Image (cartoon, rainbow, N blue to C red):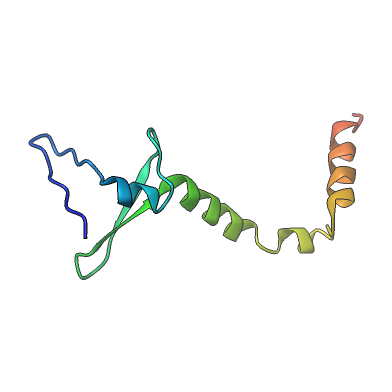
Amino acid sequence: MNLAKISANGRITVPVEIRRLPGLKSGDKILFFHKPNWEVVMCNASSQAIRRAQAAFAGAAEAMGISGEDDVQAIVDEIRYEKD
């Protein structure tokens, strides 16, 4: 268990052991979620954003018929060299 104190202006120093768990570094943003039982969950905002993007794009490659890097490169070339 780790204990942190809230300062008069609302600042909290997150214990080093807790910062290491989600890979937090100086300057990172933290998301806080509260559950119905008043439990608060903290997570690294960057990794959470990546997970949400991955979930949003899940299945998109298959839907577009993309099966590998060559297909991706073909699409990039088509857009890059497209003539009006």
